[in-house]
Structures are given as structure tokens and as C-alpha cells.
Image (cartoon, rainbow, N blue to C red; front, side):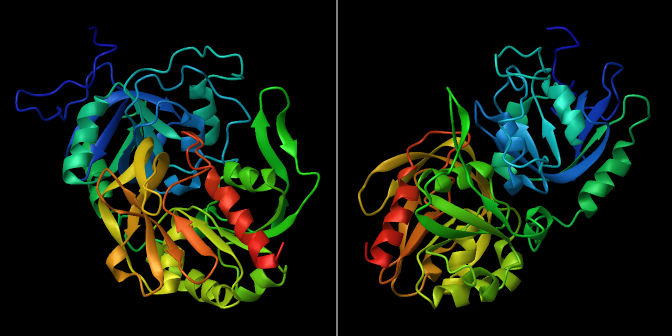
Length: 401
């Protein structure tokens, strides 16, 4: 193994050296003083956030542009990130949401017929600061065992890197607990969504025969979630996270969808919960995912808390407590609903088979349900696509069809 491909050198104690190697032009510095040297990728500069890891083997463009990653530095545990390049179709939002990326191997030349540019060039355009050449397995174990640390990536090829300054910045960063990030990633005004899912022959389609009017509250919505709704005949009106009860109901929706998103649900809930309570009082069918699941739980009277180790990847087993069926799911969250706090007639519907945490709820006497994971699975398996069908079936039943 040569110096150009090796992970950052370490001392005999196992702690990375604080002295910058000649081959390194970037560093990941954690709040506890750990310094990991590597080679910079993407934009130059600094990125500060919570260091997490994602175990997905595919879909790195979708992951980087997932708004649920706002405030976070993503460590990819799969080593071959960038080998299929980047394109204009595999985006969940137009602008990258994460603070930075950490890679094991250097980004290679792309090898895929859909690629239009090198991932490094795309990261530069997106303003994403990254670092390659790190021992990502070791970093993932650190996150798994000790929790997600605060960290700073510094990519400075032509300047000195002051690890002490970076460590202080990481230590001073307040963290995601108590942080409302939905306001940062939500849309600024309402818009209509009619694009359907991608097919090999035709690319993305267009809704031509709308059957349902759905209002989607955008806490950080992914495009492929909206496409799955449109695929089933939903004409979707997307409203900002700060929309009031009146803003939502004036569109006379057949159903209301609560999207994924980043940050602490209790912070976002300060304005989202009162608006949602007014919606729930009408009895309109409501479906939430991810942050939307957490906001719904808060509106029903439950509580949420930050997890020691969040769920981020495309291989998480979840059990449906009604049917006993196990789904392999795509997930990205660092907070969870406390199932013991759910009120009467609100029942946990799904449970993680990794750590037993809550993965869904349903209201027994109303057409209201939610899941913690991402059923559109972009990237990931398609085991949970049935949930979108369940939503429109609830709308049909509510309308008496």
C-alpha cells in the first residue's frame, strides 16, 4: 500500500497524528481532538457538522441531496463512492443538503452510461467539502460506540491547517439537539408537483389523470417521495414547513402528507405541531414519514428523543407488528419517537429489528398513520412502496368510493 492510497497514519497508541503529512491537503478534526488526515475532494474550505455514517452501497447522489442530512457530515462506509459519476436526474433536491462527505478511497473516473460528469466536479459545483483516504470502518466504529461526534472538515490545499482551531470550532458547535433545520431546507412558497417516477425507456413521466388532491407539508421533502405520490394519481400541492392549518386546508385536500426532513422534531414542532393539530381535527387522511412521523407523534401527544446511534442506510430490517412481515428499509434519522408516550388509540405499527426502536404508528379510529423510514427507497429496496398505496386507499375509503 502506497502513501497515496493509505489511510491517515497513526501513532503507536492508535490515535491519528496531529502533524500534517506531506501528502495530505485536508483533515477531519473531531471535537475530542482526534485529527484524521486525508486528501481533499469537492470544494475547498471548511464544513462543520455532526459526523454520521451511511451504509448504502448505491445512491450517493440521492444521499448527498437528501434534505434530511442538513447539518451533517456523511461518512460513506462503502468504499467505491463516485465510480458511476454524477448526472442531473438522481437528485432529491437541486442543492446538496449535507455539510460534507468522508470517503475511504479516492474518486475514480466514472464508468456508467448515465454519467454526465465526475463526482468531484459535481461536489465542487454543489459547494460540498469532502475528504478521502480515511479509514471509514474505524470512524464508523467510533460513531457506533461513542455516538455521533461534532467535527470539522478542512480542505486547504494551499494553506496551513490549524487542527487546534478546527477542534475548538467543532467543540463550540451547538449540535442538532434543539436545532430547527426544516426552515433551512423547506420551499419558500407553495408549488405544484406532477412528475412521476423514472423508467428506463422514458425517464421521468408526467401525471395526466389526477384522481386525488394531496397537500404535502415540506419539512425537507425528497423528490422521489413526491413522484411516488404522483404515480398513484395524486396532484400534489407542496407547502412550506411553516404553513398554518388554514394554509393547508384552503386547498381542500383529499389527503395530507407530512414529509421527511432534518433537525430536532421538538424544535420544528414549535410551529408545525399547532398547524397539524388543526388538520387532524378535520379527520382528513394523513400520512407522515421520517420527520413527518415524529411531528405527527408530537401532535398526537407523544414525545421524541435524540438517538445514541441514528439509522442511516438502505438495509434496515423493520417488522410490521400487524402482519409480522419484515421489510428491508431505507432510513435516515437521528431522533426517534418514544413509543411508551403514545396516547390511547395510537398504536405502534412497526419496530426496528436492529435496536427495537419505534418505526411507525397508526391511529385506531382515524385514517392517520406514519413510518420512520423512507418508503420511496431512493436509494434502497422497494419493500415499502405499498405504503403509498395504503394512503390512497385510505383516501378512497374516506371519500366513500
